[in-house]
Image 1 (tube, rainbow, N blue to C red):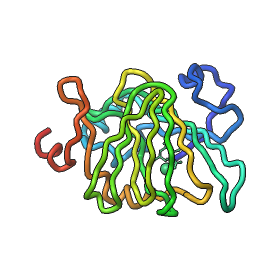
Image 2 (cartoon, rainbow, N blue to C red; image 1 turned 135 degrees about the vertical axis):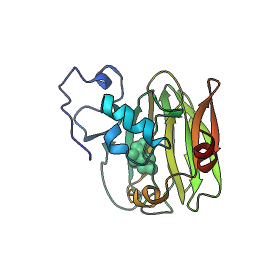
Image 3 (cartoon, rainbow, N blue to C red; image 1 turned 135 degrees about the horizontal axis):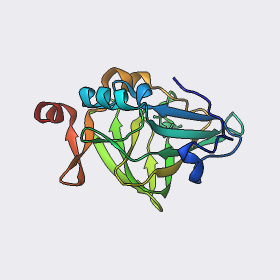
Image 4 (cartoon, rainbow, N blue to C red; image 1 turned 180 degrees about the vertical axis):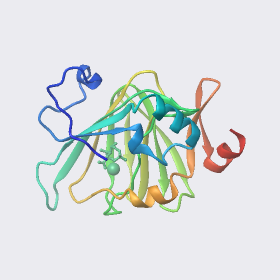
Length: 196
Ligand code: 6PG
Ligand code: NI
């Protein structure tokens, strides 16, 4: 469920970060919107019972549609963990599979988790202040905040890209970024589930 939020409500935490574009459509995703995304379902349910925390928000700028046009989104992904897994975005493939995207990190520290459509090849790309990540077409992409501060970034993509969440919702990413001795490590989901 995506809700519009009141940009004039100064009590919302992201109001203090330069990560909301005033007057632009803003979507926010809370723990309750991320059912099935985190590997440790019991930890997710326990956290949700405590508070339906805001995990991330994205302001979208879509100036024009059509050939050659670009859209972009300004995202703020909060710091936190569910069990040992860091806060993350839902992740998606673009509906127009060939559409690539460029992510530009503005603040904080995190990673992009990239997987091919079959989930057989995975890549970790550092994303944070001053870091740029190129997401090729045909690539599932998820943003992960591995640091103590909000991770703020811009993603620029062709206006024709669109979002396909269904393919990821059906199988989830094959890999997870989890904390081990204070550092993020990439594990196969099934390995993590069998050893956690
Ligand atoms: C896009 C971008 C980016 C993304 C956000 C939220 O294609 O629009 O990849 O703006 O939407 O990081 O991630 P989810 O769309 O996966 O929730
Ligand atoms: Ni995208």
